[in-house]
Length: 354
Ligand code: F0G
Image 1 (tube, rainbow, N blue to C red):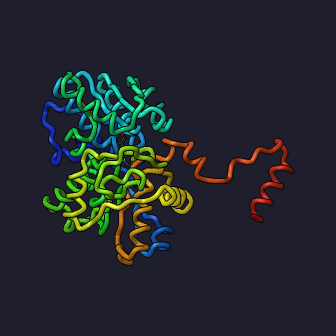
Image 2: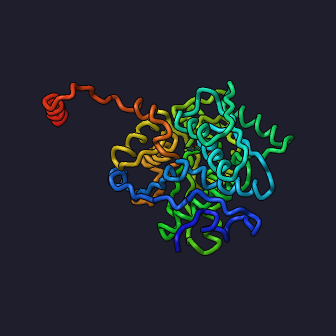
Image 3: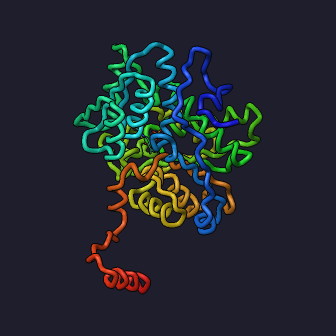
């Protein structure tokens, strides 16, 4: 049977009924790719869940398709969200497809151009506030409480419901849950969604085991690890530049119940992992996504991860979202040459000697 979208495929696990519109942009069904070279290097059995291949280039589409469909079912005419970029791109796309108004509130100057351009071209009303994500979220939560507009941040329970299907796909592909699920943590919705998904799939008899849930915050925005909100979060991984995660408690519960952990990784560790993914595996994920691999490398170094463990890293967003970050992450720039055979040949020879 051909795949016709996430809501249809996992309908028995989702809160839908005859009134729910059949909305899809063919989200979900993303590849789980074995990381052959990194597996060998780290002495583990490592897989990459490539969420950047969703229709708008991030995992947000899984939750957004359901959130927007349910908003339409409830006759809502407008949706609103705060975003570090990916949520706004996804909301804008699904709202456009549903014919709804979409308002996105972003931290001015801290959203990658790829994401911002998506929100704009899909026709969202983009409001850039002179503050950070946490402040933007506070504002939209307040507005949605008092005005006829549906909030589609991950505090909307349908977002979590949709995103839990990532865990289903991992189990479907591996035949069981992995030993460890490593995932970046920003607002902490996704780690909570995956944990819910793994538990539900086990209860339904589709997997025998549960993974240890290991979430990783960026060091400069590591509120959960520090145990207090970070007023001025800073990290190169702008997607997870969040100092007061909305699903804080659910994330801590996921880590505790699963005997996993919430850890943190530095910007240098994130950028190392970002380059590893492209250069050793051919997978271009955005910097925030690489926090999952950076965390796995750290766990392996500290002895918290056993030799041979089966590990899945969730790569949450596509590297093309932020080409400027890629250009900054490598010292080698394109060489400009005269348009002559000799000049090109010379450069090729020099390259092989280097
Ligand atoms: N990775 C990427 C690429 C993200 O865009 C986000 C969150 C996360 C990881 C963290 O996921 O918030 O569920 O813990 N981005 C949100 C946004 C905040 O607005 O696009 P989380």
